[in-house]
Length: 347
Image 1 (tube, helix red, strand yellow):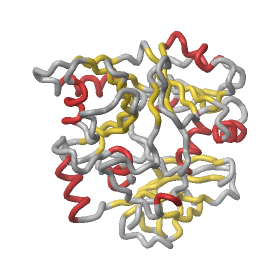
Image 2: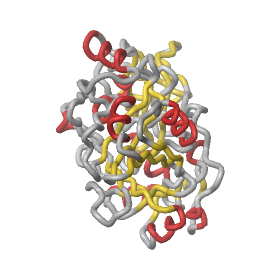
Image 3: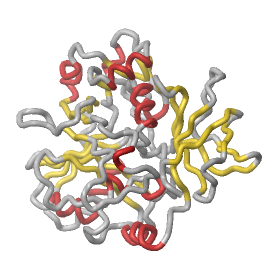
């Protein structure tokens, strides 16, 4: 995890729920688990639990030019985005490196964006710097609104608060898959997930008496779904191709945006220098390797661990970035623990 994503300092009121244990790092403001992370994972898979994501950044954009403007500065086709249609978009550096991951939904008057915890001020400041003379207004709303994660696979309905439905793993229009498996064999096929954006003072009432799951459960399911997360699967030189993020977040033919030249050049003329892998870790010990630890082929460093968790069925698993040239059959070692590769991004 990169240190550019600072944790939110104010803890969630849901940390007062029975059994709640606070997370660490960027997820410190919400619960890691509520006493039984394995059961919490099963409840998420069954569609019964909710996850406190109230530490996620919330930014709104209003004004008649909002969609065409966001279309011009991010990676996704947003110009004719219909109300209550969810999309994912990225902000890239001029050299094509991932800087922000945006969960975007428009309600017909306001574009709602949620982003990684702690990124709200930087994201809103960058957006304002790009406004020029356009009729848009960007507002950082994290203090006013909170996010609740739900295992629900449909868009928000009229009368509901703004809701962003995760498109992963669907290959969205204008995009392409870099995965090593066909779309109908993707491990996240059928995955249902959305983020409900509610006034912060209504967070407790929105969750109600539903069972709660913590970030331990959510992260384990994310890893098993091969789903990249900003600040975990990304560093200062990550391009979207390396982690299969073109699948949901990049429209390849929509026109120019910052970083577009790198995206097009790598897609049309080459391959990304690194590739995402899923790692099945030896579970004979009690400890998990540390995120950021070196992935070793013998004594040679070939990559690093980006995420790690304990899955209720798969056991200890992780995601990692390795050199593209690494043979797919190579068994790796991380912090002294054996790690078998499962290819995510094809080499």
